[in-house]
Structure formats: C-alpha cells, structure tokens
Length: 560
Ligand code: N01
Image 1 (cartoon, protein in one colour):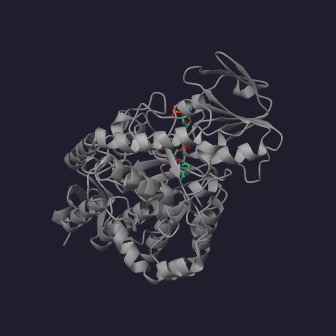
Image 2 (tube, rainbow, N blue to C red):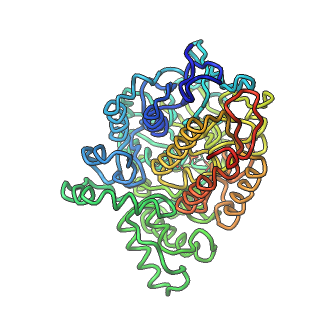
Image 3 (tube, rainbow, N blue to C red):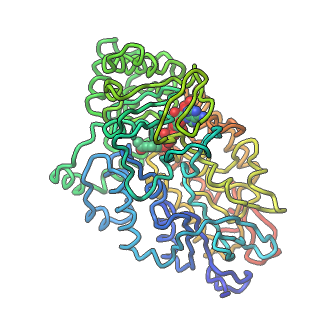
C-alpha cells in the first residue's frame, strides 16, 4: 500500500490506487488517459481478454456502427484523428476494435489495464473514505475514486427459454460472439430477435445457411445504411476541417455534425414535398439523417405517422410476399421511439427462398428441444440458434456488480424502482463514485464517443478540483438528484419515446422497473447544463474536507 498522491497523501487513508476504472471500452480507455495525466495512480479492470468493450464482445457477422466513422471516434487528440484512416462510412466492428487497440497502444495505456478480470463488488468504507474493490481473480484493492465505465449495452440477455440446455446444436448470443469465425454453411439456422443486432446478422446468415428461420416477436423500423468505402479525398477533406466538425457536433442534440437542423414541422409541407424529403433521406442512408427530416418527428404523433407510413410503404414495396411484408411492418409504436435500425439488405433478405419469417407474437416460443425449437403451433428443426435478444441495458452492468454506498446501501436497492442520478454522473449516497454515460444522461441517445468524452472530461475536472482544493468526498445533494430525475422524466414525457416498449424503458427485461432511462433533452443542452453546474461551483453537489471526519457542505462553499 502506498499513500494517496491526490492531495499529497497526508489526510486520507492510504489506498492502493487513486482511481479504479471498471471497463476498458471507449470510456475506460479515455478515462485512464485523462486521469493518468493528472498524475494519479489508476487501475482499469476489464472482463474481456482485450480492450474494446462493446466492440470486443459484439463481433457477430455484420456488426457495424450506425454513426459515421469520422464522428464515432475520439476528438481529444488531433494527431490521432489525423493519422487514423477509416476505410468505410460506417465502420465494421473489426475496424473499430483495431482503432481502440491502437489508441491503447499509442497512449501507452495497456500497462494500467488488467484484462480477464471482472469486478465483483465495490464497497464504500465510509470511515476511510475509500472504495474497496473485489475482482474475479480473487484479489481486492482500494481506491479513492471509482469510475464505472461499464457501458450501456454490455450485459447480454438470454431469455429464459425452456430446453436450452438440451439443445444439441450450437447456439450463440450476438453480444458474446466467439473470436473464431462461425460457419453456417449448409445449416438450418434460427435467429431469435429482430432488433439492430438481428437486422445486421440476418442478411449475412441467409447467404450461408441452407435454411434460415427468423423468429420475430415485434417488427422494427429500419432504414438503409448505404454504407460505402470512404474515398481518400473525402476523408482528407474532413480531416482538414476536423476541429470545425468536432465543434459543430458539440452543438447538436445527438453529438454528430454534418446534418442540417430541420426548420419545419412535418405537417408544414404538403404530402408530396414531405415524401420527397423522406425519399432523399432514404437514398442518402442513415437513421439520424432520417429522423432529423422534421423538427417534430419525435414529439408529435401525427408528424411521426407521416415518416412511419413512408417506411411502411418501403417495406411493402421491397418484400414480395404480402403476408411477410405485413408481418415485418411495425404498427404499434412511433418510428424512432424504439431505436431506429440501420440495415444493408434486411427487407430484401425475406425474398430469398431459404428464409422464413416466423411470428412468435401470435405463436410464442414454447421450448427449445434437442433438435430445434417448438412454438405453440409448430416444430422447427435447427442445427444452430442465434440469440439476437439484446441486453439488460443502461443499468444492467452496474446492477451486476455488488455496489454499496453509505450505510452499506446496495445500489440495487436504491435503484429498485428505477435509476436515480444527478446528471447521470453520480448518485446520492455513493460519494466519489462516477458513472460514465449513466442513466439520466444522453448516453445512447447521442453519439456514444462524444457523450463519453464529455462525461470523462467532466469527471476528470471534478476529481482534479477535489485534489486541488484538498477535498475528500463528493456526491449529489438529495434535492438536486430529485430535481434531475423529475427533469429527465418530464423531458421524456414530452416526447413519443415512452409510447414504445423498448430497452430504453427496461421493458425488455422481466421484472425491471419501467423508467425511461436516457436524457432526451439533447446532447447540446445537456452539455450546457453540466458546464453551468461546474461554473456555479458544482451546484447541487456536496463535498467534505480532506479530513476523514469532516462534514459535507455545498461544494460551492468549499471551492475557492
Ligand atoms: O437488442 P434489442 P439488439 N422471444 O433489444 C427479441 C445497439 N446496437 O442487440 O422487441 C422472442 O433491440 C426482441 O423482441 P421484442 C442499438 O442501440 C447497435 O438488437 O422484445 N424474441 C427483439 O426483437 C440497439 O438498439 C447496432 O418483442 C425475443 C430482440 O430480441 C441495441 O444495441 C447494432 C425474446 C432484441 O432486440 C440493442 O440491439 C447492434 C423472447 N423471449 C446493436 N426476448 C448498430 O450500431 C427478446 N426478443 C447498428
């Protein structure tokens, strides 16, 4: 054990590290880089065998980002963004993984990242003002600060299907895909789930499999990606103004530059003009672009219907069998209220003779069998099953760890009725415990890399402030947290998002509290709120002096 260096190590109990970071995806890697630059002793624990997070685990065929590569990348180093060449408009999983690994090497981060190590618990020792962290290798350590860089879609969900253990074929989850390639050639394959992952993998499996059965419960809207190689001159042109594009991204609701903000409501245009607008977006490709056609697509149901009807028409025009087209057509929720998917040849795949769509809403899956899958009405012999069944999103990876704050309060208990945070960054009763892109922040409703950088920058500033001011513990005031939770809910309730069953609300996980978790007031607005809070002396936060027995006080009172 060595003394903490954060404040010269005089008043605090000694700790192994100043900061423990859980997870080595985009968030953990960048947090390590920033905090190490403060001179802190930082340790990152990563469950996977390498860095990469989401892009390490989701290596299924077709896995690809739905944000342009030049946007879905770090902005903190101009050298990095100038030297890295993205081959395609939307990067494939392998390219993004290579990028994160390059970042880890380029900034010499690996020496502080311990892979193959899962964090099991993080427990606050109130008296010492330290977090005790226990890991799957049987070790434990202490740190003054704990940063959860655990990701929003990192706890895969396997529905509780009867008979899974008896299934004699191979089965896979898209979020836990094996490193070695999987060959479906000549096999009868079943894919369960038609969210973003299913929609990406289905067209590729269809090209290999002898027969593909897609088991769909709820159809999703999807628009074409129109992915293409990035021409060297286009990439160079973007790089020559990278600083400008990054600044532009900061002022958009989703942290992505290059999309002109809509100026009209959908019903301001005639039907003919509107359809021409949607058609142009459809041809250009991209989900952000499509939903940004009009100002009110996510707030006004009548406006939303015009965009939803356009996509429904496209499905009917693409899928030759009318019954299959109808099954693929979402009718029960507004377009964009569930994550709008991005595809390459998804609807066309159902015109192949070897692909069958099975509606498991009207005929639910009853059980897996040794040789396949049985619904209430039919039997499907299968050699392999792919579960594209999603994640326990946003809170899942946090709740998976035994986290206990003041008075040994488990986070699982505090959040039993839904997550409660201030700014999605911290939660009352868990001092010096930060969450990157936590519930109540824009997170998945923004470009994740942009949201991550903004959060890590804020957290770094906060930890640096505590060190500079010789302060000990920081956490939100209960009132600030209550007000923020109310604001997050009111903001969501003013949109169409809560009208859909989705992982945004936790409704995909039986027994999970139904709360719309991301902040949908816009990344730009959110960033300004965070900046204001900081400028106002960390408004809404209380801090203690460095002495272990010091009483919490409003942060502003203690900051010079
Ligand atoms: O997961 P999902 P995902 N019986 O939850 C079905 C990001 N992402 O991995 O809708 C039958 O969306 C479930 O049916 P239903 C992106 O943010 C991004 O696809 O609950 N079916 C649904 O169809 C995305 O939104 C990219 O009725 C069952 C599917 O499984 C998020 O990750 C690519 C079932 C799960 O869909 C999650 O996407 C991939 C059951 N018991 C992922 N249980 C890109 O960047 C679940 N399902 C492009």
